[in-house]
Image 1 (tube, rainbow, N blue to C red):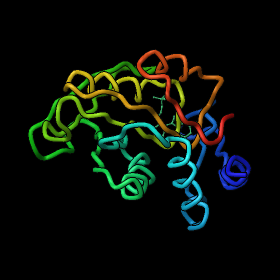
Image 2 (cartoon, protein in one colour; image 1 turned 60 degrees about the horizontal axis):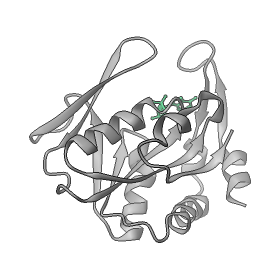
Image 3 (tube, helix red, strand yellow; image 1 turned 90 degrees about the vertical axis):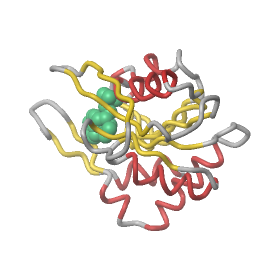
Length: 175
Ligand code: AMP
């Protein structure tokens, strides 16, 4: 099963990047091509029947499976980046972190108003980043088609924060 395959591959790194955080290191997954294929196939299966016009992947680990899934589904991939990285005209959204704020950006031509955009990241923690991405997409006239994550940390209640935007949330391996 995909859940076990992902959980066996993921490496827990205690106290990274700061004390008290158990970092879920997905790099061992990337060394296993068959597991990468299985992950993208599982996303495609669980998202069947949903209109998806483009996939927005969140910097930086959301680029990995985001682009692969977009390619499999035959839809465009658009990068959601941290402030100052995108070269063309941008729209941005600031959001609160545990300490301070962060800003994410999208190119103004990332998609057309009315298009259905699937949001992807490697991991759902508090949901703050995915929520900010969904708000930015909506402010640009997009419709949130759903969210998909390889890993979800249920105890941080990210699902509760993003489900009001769109309740189609796929998490392949939940903790
Ligand atoms: P959040 O906005 O709290 O849902 O955080 C999600 C973002 O932070 C994702 O891009 C994750 O890659 C990263 N992240 C947060 N917590 C962890 C963790 N424990 N292990 C790995 N990545 C994490």
